[in-house]
Length: 383
Length: 142
Image (spheres, rainbow over the protein chains, first blue to last red):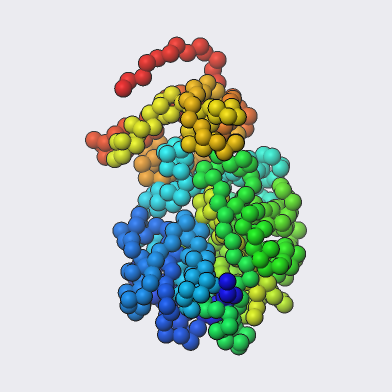
């Protein structure tokens, strides 16, 4: 297999883009990417998206977007893996280029969520869970995470406020990200007084949805310009766990994160001590905690400690959510995996301004689909 | 409306019928073709007792469409006495404060309406605080 590099990135601001359609925002991200890569076209297009068929009445997104962005006639597909659709699309494009089958690909993640009523979006998000045995009981996606968080707090004795540093850090970093949905800081008091969504998860534990798209341009490493802006994919792995939370051997362990990160570390010849920046999947604060534990940054049950000990900000031992994370940058579900990858590229290029991590050599992104059922881990290094 | 789907799941929804693995004797709910404990084929039906305890719980304030009319409601992970954990609503709580470890038992309740006012009423299992009342075996309507 060939080594693959990212040579161009693009992203849109996340928000309620009522004036723009799904293809408009996907196009925005792709055209920025082409400009950034100094290319006019790729051989194939991979689209990460979860819900276009459910809430936008549009499938066949490969052809739909290839048509829109002027890749007439080119190979194009949508890849769906719930909230991990973005990273799954990236890995699909990566495998196509790495195999030698094609020499260039654009991967775009896009989600257009705010055209629909909130309860319909809630129902559409719940399709990531088991329709017969979870959703039919009336549990929402937030509810599943709340069930995990309650049990976690019970077993390890953490208080709700012990999770606050994750949300506070994410918001503090998003202030400096012009693409973030929520570019405001929050205080501990705001976190504590936020309205309850599904206890113990309140509004400040939960990431906001939004419309957004992010994209990358990938080529074989030996065709990438050596201008200090190319980034090599050093590790890429995916794993699955049971679709239902209740079927897990241990609902408090992200087994698919453990499996995919182990493989990605091995491929990259690295380990948790060498990761300089980590964009993790903080759809809910409990997911940030479980991800840190699964990836070897904290002992089991000790994830909140990293936040409380002030280690997760851009100058800390393990910077996370440096552009706002899902919590403040926003979570346009099928696009999120691509936003994470774009943000790691920005860190490796040194383009992150106030939240730039110093001396970044290795960055990691982890994208979670469902309540832990599909998890992809990618590791990137500067060329 | 998904009439066939609701019909297909009636044994599980109304009767909590799962499986027991003929190879390793693990109790399985909901039923599946491959035993999650030993990886071999598992298709022998098994009647669960319907008793268990609360493993975790939450209250849903923002319900998915179809469940709006009953929100807020409590959903739990219930650890059945026979081993498996299942997702189910808690009901008949009245003044009971829900706690992890609380003993509960299965009852049959309306889950939601599938479709409009002329749609299907979907019934299924929920769990209430354990009451220790002997139940006679009532026949379910077909």
